[in-house]
Image (tube, rainbow, N blue to C red; front, side, top):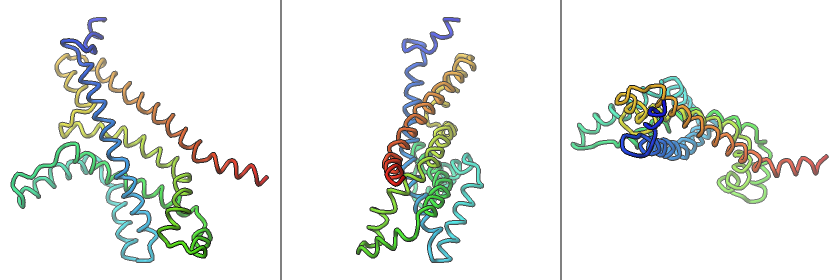
Length: 236
């Protein structure tokens, strides 16, 4: 039994270092995807609230498509489909697996996070924008200084849930040969024929990342709600 656990070591024949590198790749993809997906999601949310019927329809079509299509299929389209299409125009064109994974997961994250952003935007009273305008602030300044800080506080729980889902969805990128946790665990299983050991280790790594993320999100929520709690206490 102890010989099996030696397979997780860092010496010769051990897969410990490879698993840590895979974990680093998993976190790297997730962290690179997060700002891209959230920023695009916010843009989509703003388009949904636009006065233009065309822009609202465009945003709705986007979210409908990327919420309805499996993430794995989106990944295949970006990595294989777009790559083949571009190679017909530009010989030698290639998309690194890391970039393909980030873009594919980011497009999906944007679709789901846009719904969170829309809900948060709807919770902010129109009068606050009107007051900012009365103070001489432009629309961009009003959004940056008045709306966005409140938006983050309201949207954070939903965005935190989006992050947790994204963290698990990074396991899909193993199918395009990016050496993440699942890729290394699968390869180790093929070599050693120890599925419970390596897939169990992969499960524990994802669980660890989820626990750390839950702790971090909880701290962020406490921090963003601190001023609100103080204000609420002062008005009683």
